[in-house]
Length: 325
Image (cartoon, rainbow, N blue to C red; front, side):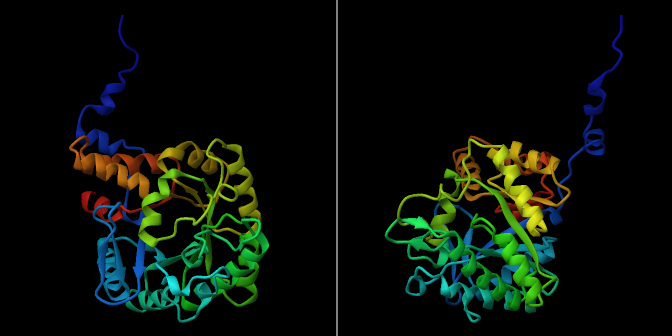
């Protein structure tokens, strides 16, 4: 009696394991989220995201140059809006001289080859902290009015030089509205990375600390997806494909690996995943306690996301991962 197949042969040395690895991470897999603040010479560590920072634009440029030289080719921009500029219309979001628009121009001037993606949602600009315009009497989010505001926001980002807009709002019909506006206004070269399956998750907490964008009342469950649902993600995917999305995203990532695979199996579009702030913070907290090996946890986590089907990964560990690779 003998074994027909010895599967352990393929695991017997580091060289063989590397040679036969099905999933390989590279620096170009990563999108680096960047938080930008007003002012100069500001580097502010986010308490709930140890080792991650919100920077003024001058320091942001230094960061972008550094990560470009490391091999990271894409950044996803988020801004912290001054409270005095917030209202219920989001009009600061399409200010041609606003912080986001200024940042896009400055980054493209400093590092022309960097792929610049911009967050499209109203929560940083809203007095209510919601991703859309609020009906204050009913406490509901106005879908169509929000899409109109976000369309103006998207066009202002395109005019500033963004390569991709990244709508994270989860309003119905927004991808089609953005694509039509971009084509009509002469920005047909600007891509849309849609947050296609963005779930109402508890893992966003540290991000909201970073930008002071937590909802002022209620929650976001009427527009972000129910985490109990899988097939609903396919409905969102088919809508986004039909409306003209160029990249589709799943957010969060690690708790939604099944959704990443479901999306990957049902589209020919590139799939991205957002390894969110809470997932980052959990690894950091466990590592600080000495309960896990942080470098190993970083690479294993990111590999699992790519193995699940993500072509691109937005992650706060991008710089750490490149250094480890």
